[in-house]
Length: 320
Image 1: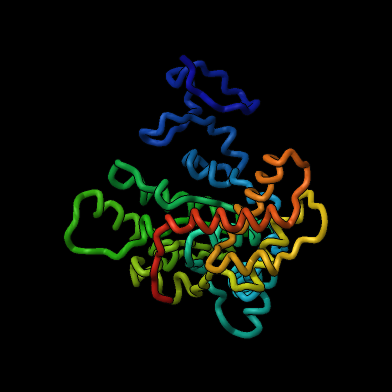
Image 2: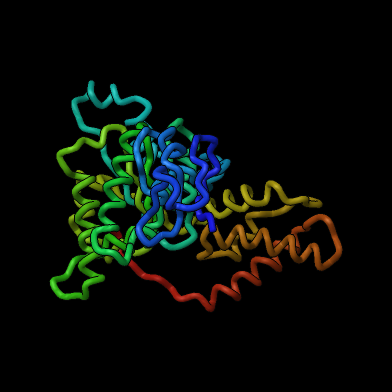
């Protein structure tokens, strides 16, 4: 049974791995790719997992799609976008450009959306990885994947690496622990080495995101690695209005919608909750057999989402 999933048009005509020398696979992964296909992305053999990171599409997201975070957008653009577009500015001033940024805040506030907006706004390669997906059961495989990821990024400069849920591998190190804990610590040490090693990152920037900054290792947080920490908080009332207008723009509406009145009932809502309000408003219109939404639908939707939020636990953390 052929397990080659390559769809390229090179000379590889295998029916199984024993017939072709052109196949590589991740240890234990069971997924095979033709090296000829990967060579077009840098002329080197890379882990298929890293290859799929490059295939991540940031989507049609711009800064106008992010509401209520103007100050956070400015800080992120200074660290990530400005050094890639205008590095001469840092040379004239005589400072080194920051290497990375940590986005932290409650779930649903737009951390991933911000990273996608940055990647979509500039002409740069974009590698997206969830930190928990790096952890492998084989010793040394996770650290190897980190090395290949950064090597791949350096070969495709300018490049942005977005690592979501960084707390999965970036937690505080302890002397006690199981072999699995020690493997995660080795993965973290390799990440620290890549961020602060002798090899210059060049035009490679890193964005990390977490909703648990309190558990991160201090070595990861120090300047020279993740130079800037940007809090992505819950939106205030003006921010909630802005987010509601963004998500409600594509909805078919009848009559004027008083978003200010709607968000007064949405105290403590994050951006994901506000998007859910728009979805629920559309569902109320469908139940009423209408193809448009009225203001009363939004009012009923925000009350419904508020009831559901009572079931959620409240996450507390201190600022970094």
